[in-house]
Length: 120
Length: 116
Image (cartoon, rainbow over all chains, first blue to last red):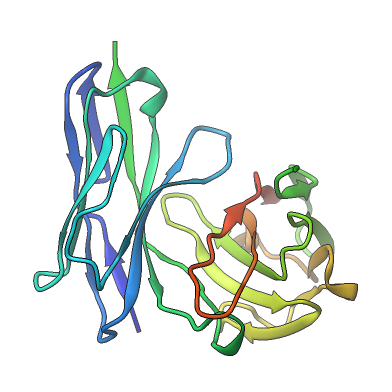
């Protein structure tokens, strides 16, 4: 079974600064995806960034980037130039690589989350 | 294209009552997932459907829980004889599952259940 651990229950950052959220995971799978999801207060969960395990290059989406260390099973999220709208719960998640219609479920395994507050 | 919708958004019930939640996925998405999120925790997988077939159920899904997806469109999650431990946010997600490709799950806003 896969597990995802987020060791920072809460973090805060000043607007325009950079913050890094940590995530470690445990799996025996060799082919998988890792994600960071954002859940703003009273709003639905949205995907921030995705990393395929077979790719060595770290994923980047605008102000969001990851540091994927496969051997260490570490997957951190860096948010640059933090904005007030980044205030949210952030969840790290794991998905075993599915085979689409031929494979099993592509269920997500989530960590407990990190509550990020961006201060003005 | 509208997103995933869930109704009701909030439900307060008394212990022992039955409740039913509805999820309307993104049109033409063939997979539908239910997750449960308790306070201070990340979402946990409950079950999923591929079209109308329920293909996997978590051990979290006790026999008081039942889910359906008639005709492969909307889905309902029913909890019978609710207990206080059932209080949680119930999230629905849908995806378009294709052969050998990554399939993003899109989440609904959730139904928050409070059992008194």
